[in-house]
Image (cartoon, rainbow, N blue to C red):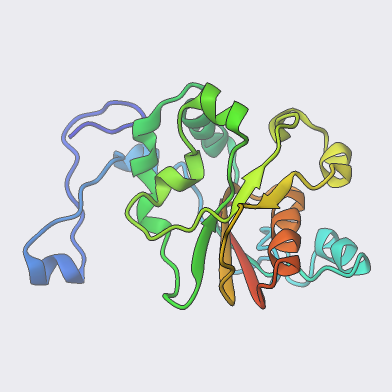
Length: 215
């Protein structure tokens, strides 16, 4: 198999404990060189939003708290240059096969219902797939949220993101579970996930946590 990033050949399948039992190996989608360019968030991070390099609650989360919002988020990777290039190809150039690269990192406790951040119908029509849901194609997802068309988050400034109106609504005739984890691809200001959590809590959900691949 070739690396999905650089097309280098001769990838070696990875083997974990389960693979030893089942005699099945896990396919590798990256060569070692490309894999090493994606950096995981280390031990020093904000305990609320996982912002790297922080040892205490970061300024962003303190600002949210002043607005009455306590962030309860987890992330795995830093949003560095390699991640920017990855998402540029994956989201904006439509390289759908790249969803395989990080899908193994999307694992959640069974008691939580998994709700991906949706695209607006207009955005979905342009892209052709929901990049968040694609990472979790084998998981039992609940599409409880709908999103109104708005200017893409990637084109907004930080200030514009923070003052953006809530674009989410509960999908018609949805049954709201007690525990939900809302999943997005990238956590930047937190505004998207804050809006999603607010919508779900107002609909009756007791516990809402959030997760993103990158922070």
